[in-house]
Amino acid sequence: MSDAIPCLFVVGTGTDVGKTMVAALLVEALGARAVDVAVSKPLASGCARQGGRLIAADAIRLGRALGLRGAALARAHDVISPWRAAAPLAPGLALARPPSVAELVRHLVERARGRGALLVEGAGGLVLPYARNGTVLDLLGALRRQRALHLSVLLVGAAGLGTINHTCLSVAALRAAGLEPHGVLLSRGQRAITPDERGNPAAIARLGAVALPVVVPHVVDDASHARARRIVMACVGDRRGTATRRQVR
Image (cartoon, rainbow, N blue to C red):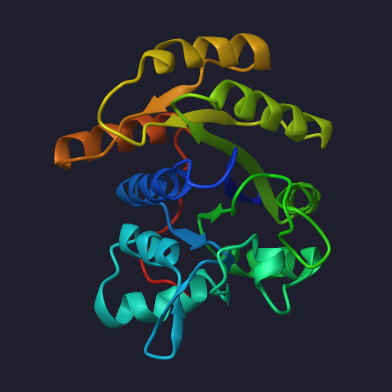
C-alpha cells in the first residue's frame, strides 16, 4: 500500500554482532534527514537492575540516537523496550510472560502510527525463542502481512571469522520464510582488519546470492562515527518523513 509506513527491521546472524550499533546509526541518519522516526527494541533481556528498575542498555543507546537525554531518555526507555528481563537468555525464555506474535505486531503498528518510519531492532538471531508463540522470523512473517507497514529487513553479521556460514544460513532462513533481505551489513567489532575479513563480503555475495555486503567500520571517534553513519544510511536509501518530531511517544 502506498500509505503504509516504512518499517526497517534490523536482525542479526546471532548475538553481539553489531545490531544495536547499526540501528542507532540508522536512527541518527534518519533524524538528520528530517524523518520522523519511531524506534523500538520491544523485547530486551540481560538487563541491569538500577534503582528497582530493569534498564536495557540497547534501549538507552537507541534513545540517545534520537537525541534524548536526562528525564526524556528515562521516559523513552520504557517505551522503546516495554518487555524486559534480567536473565541473559533469549527473550522468550528470559521473560516470565512474553508477548505473543500478535501482541508484538499490534504494539509495533501502534508505535508507527502517525510517524514517518519505524525502526525495530530484534534480539539475537532469527530462530530463537522470542515471542510466547514464535521466533524473530515468525514476527517478521507477521509484519510482512501487516498492511499498515511496509517491511524492509536489514541483516547484520560480524565482519570477521565465522560470518560466511552464519550470514548465508540467515539469508537462507529469510528466503525460506518468503523474505528477501533489503541489505546485508557486516559490523567490524574492533579497529584492526583481520585477514579473513577482506574476503568475507565477496564470499557471502557469491554463496548467499546477495548484493555485496557492506562493511561498517569500528567507531572510535567522530570521523569514524560519521563515516559509519553514511555507510549504513546508503543501504536503505532516502526515507523522508513529512514532519520532524524527535520526541518518543
